[in-house]
Image 1 (cartoon, helix red, strand yellow):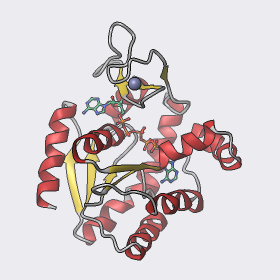
Image 2: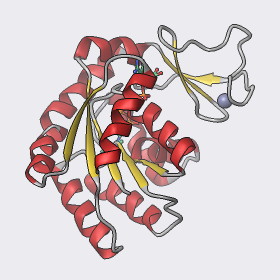
Image 3: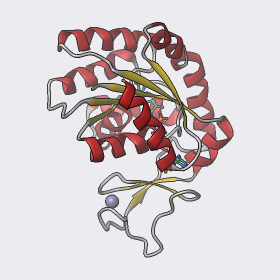
Image 4: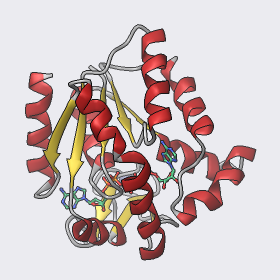
Amino acid sequence: MNIILLGPPGAGKGTQAKILCEERGMVQLSTGDMLREARTSGTEMGKKVAEVMDRGELVTDEIVIGLIEERLDGNTGSGIIFDGFPRTLAQADALDDLLARHGQALSAVIEMQVDDEALVRRITGRATCAKCGEVYNDETKPIPADGKCAKCGSTEFNRRGDDNEESLKQRLMEYYKKTSPLIGYYHAKGKLAPVDGLGEINEVKARIARVLEEA
Ligand code: AP5
Ligand code: ZN
């Protein structure tokens, strides 16, 4: 089963993708994570995209499609979760072609709906474990009081360079302008499943589970 998690920054795509990986053996393909890895490893591509990401703009279609293409040849577990990809109509077309070439299909596109006010609160409060990638939130899922990651015990946490109000404004603009047309695109294909992304992480998880049962 291959699915797309579609939604604005802070909708909870990464949080839910990690749960699906742990509980169902699916594989998460996050273009955001791949681009951040490229940045820290200092590759030419990483240097090229760093400023674009920090400004909250989209990286070129060519780069992200290339990243996804590389990963599709690897182990895809019991299915792929596309997290943060596709983000433009050109990327959606490219994904259709890539999946067809790999003899794969899309089961569902889960559109995670969260209002802007909640997105700002979530993004500005986010922290990520530097070792295992577990995602925390100052308000809703705080780092444990002993300062250690609940999953791996690490005491190092990162805050993203683009998790500030100014970049977030740009990221939201990019989402509404370039990514939200995908809602109509997948609706027309009969693949779109809107899910309320507000509420506890476990409630959202249960809503997604119901969609997957029917997919
Ligand atoms: P990317 O890394 O994809 O970021 P994003 O789409 O902005 O999404 P986020 O990771 O910020 O949010 P999320 O939905 O995963 O939320 P999370 O689960 O962490 O992209 C970053 C940049 O890379 C882009 O701006 C662009 O430059 C580039 N890029 C990436 N892909 C690209 C592409 N395809 N094309 C072009 N450029 C691309 O949750 C957020 C917070 O909320 C956390 O603190 C979490 O604990 C909390 N939270 C989660 N769920 C809940 C809940 N139910 N209730 C309360 N809090 C919650
Ligand atoms: Zn950890």
